[in-house]
Amino acid sequence: MQKPVLVVGAGSWGTALAMVLAGNGHSVYLWGRDAKHIAELKAQGCNKRYLPDTIFPVGLLPVDDLEFCLGECEEIVIAVPCVGMRSVLEIIHQYGHHNLKICITCKGLEATTHYLNHQVVEDCLGDKASTVVLSGPSFAKEVAAGLPTAVTIAGSNLETANWFAEKFHNEVFRTYTHDDITGVEVGGAVKNVMAIAAGIVDGLGFGSNTRAALITRGLAEIIRLGVVLGGRQETFMGLTGLGDLILTCTDDQSRNRRFGLELARGATVSEACAHIGQAIEGMKTSQEVFQLALKNNIEMPITEQVCKVVSGEVSPSDAVKALLMREQRQELD
Image 1 (cartoon, rainbow, N blue to C red):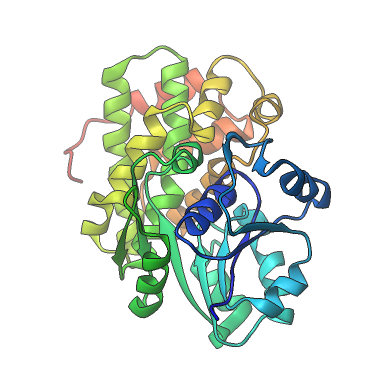
Image 2 (tube, one colour):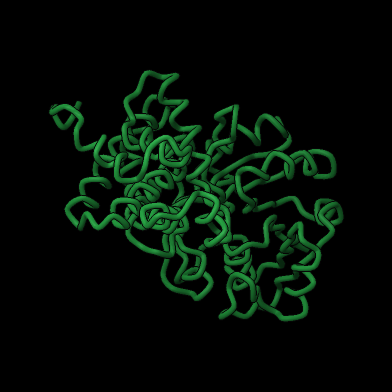
């Protein structure tokens, strides 16, 4: 008998992915830290807090005992914010099996270490797990509603990537596989920084020309960093680079874009965070990405200005002025 798949993280994204798996006929445990929230999921048969319009399919079981789940499951989907991933991995290391398949679905970098998420898994679990990442242009609400979506599942072990791709794939949730895990993760992480910038320029009323320019130059920054870290340039032309960048920079379902909009309209960082009420990965990621840029001597001016806005060094309008006043140069430098 096939073992259940464990989804760690009962927010909007974890819930949506658990619904895809269960809808495909798999048994799924959905775990979250908040026992009260898990009890609500069980009682209501839906995630009323984050995805109120979608009912859980048969086979999806919310659970609050992570240790029990780790004794039962060998396939784990991690959908917690990056800041909480290492603590979850430490529990997995203590109670999990020794031949784990792990699929990471959060997008960002670890604070202080600047590790990509698969590197955090390697640091915590060593050879105990085979790790892949799931990324691409995908809002949780649309995935849960069954709207057509395409994602990439990337890993150095294509057997594990194919395993998860087959688990998730259906007629409306299309999965592609890739072996450039570094490129896929860099694209997924840095696009959140660019989405904050896009929210700022739109919130200031700069128009469609400005947004298009920002997205294009933002992609150049993503490629610049990604290639230096070991990603392949062509990866950033795909779903997890250009595709995800366009999505998060242009649609207000993006928390990072909404965060930028709030800042441009005069909200403080704490006010914007409180109003959005969910993790804004790009806020912390901007700091880590800029440190990586400095370390590798890479110019990332949009990222730099987002960092300065988030830290309160400059206003949103002054950040845009600083970008516009940069010296003239060749586009492909």
